[in-house]
Length: 513
Ligand code: NAP
Image 1 (spheres, rainbow, N blue to C red):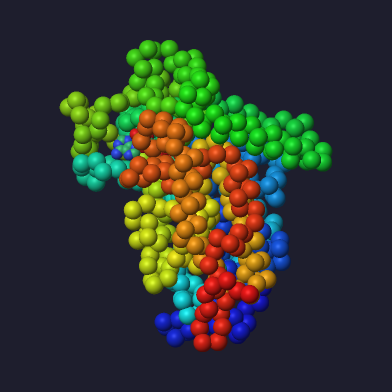
Image 2 (image 1 turned 30 degrees about the vertical axis):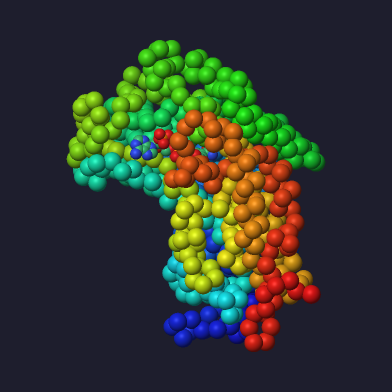
């Protein structure tokens, strides 16, 4: 990529020249890297990727807690265009997935386009110039198109518990694990029993002298048949043409069956819940503990978890699963509603992330300077999970209603990338300066989504999950098969958008000839 005077299109507030690119991408997780790779493969190199950290990998760079791994098979939890025949086990561990993403960044030549330690501070749509004015922690840029790949599980939730900040010992969230704290022989308390906690609790249980696991809602946990990949299988994946793709498709289609089962609570109870119940019964013999670990909602309403280590860990003699509500935290203890006080040396929060908002929404300002966070103040929504009315040329990877309760997020990311790539082609071909989704198209799309969500386990499974927002609406889940989303996003549907071309004297908005 060249950096020439022509690219220095305008000046920022500082009076210094500002570099202009066609596409600015934010984030270098699966989304941002995938977008960059696809652009390079299509011969588009007029872009930059802004990353606030100093390495790629997104969630797989940031999360380093013990036992961090993926519960979707690696063959499926990877890019379809970058198959890796060398996965060591069925389900990827954090380090292996992180290495895979770093390797992708190198192999596809993305690194020269990445600006590390560039945190996006704000992106403002300039209605006259019809481009985004981007301010980062290391300077200003402009871009015709803004693609966000900032995920939705990056800003940790610190629970509102009286006295929590008064705790005098080490305290950290699973997403910001403090590896300097040695848990050996300590009295440890863990708050939360979600996807992260069920992975790290089994790893810290053998070290702790005592481990109190504070469980507000019991999760459904299915078996995780993780295995080492044999050398014969590795050979097949490397040498037999089409074999790895066949296996990946086999996994993908198998996961689609889960979508069918989860779309109806009765069906889910008879099938998946039966399987998870058996796993619980087989793993926990003590009836009191088993009762405590038995969920009171339909499987899938909260994310279905997979582990062969969770139940053995919580039934160990040094572990207490506490189901009484936490009343308060003191500098040295946790006190539950029954008045019992348990001494604690180290407090670990496995309390999840702010998923029903997007942290970046407070930093993106559309037409008339309105923040996306303001537009979403009563709940977030988008069109095809990607575009929002009033935010021209903004494409959000893993935007609203793209979370899967049944399969690999990489499938959704790739589908969205295909949609953005087609939009970029259309912009060029038609000489458009911007596309802005029609408000009615967005409303209609979300009405259909709400209809499809009604009656599924995600909305009617009798639980309170992070899928639902404060109004009880579900702005998170994609409620059906991934192929449906792929079909919806394979082509950029111009009819749903207001189009603008830039003409002398300012922008002309409407349908170009
Ligand atoms: P999570 O699933 O949201 O779990 C948070 C836990 O903290 C829940 O058990 C919740 O209880 C509890 N909690 C929150 N506030 C509390 C409070 N004030 N008092 C007591 N308990 C409280 O968070 P996570 O485990 O970090 O996982 C988040 C998401 O990350 C997952 O759903 C998944 O999408 C992703 N993840 C994926 C993998 C993977 O293998 N693919 C691994 C890790 C994470 P309630 O249930 O009662 O709310």
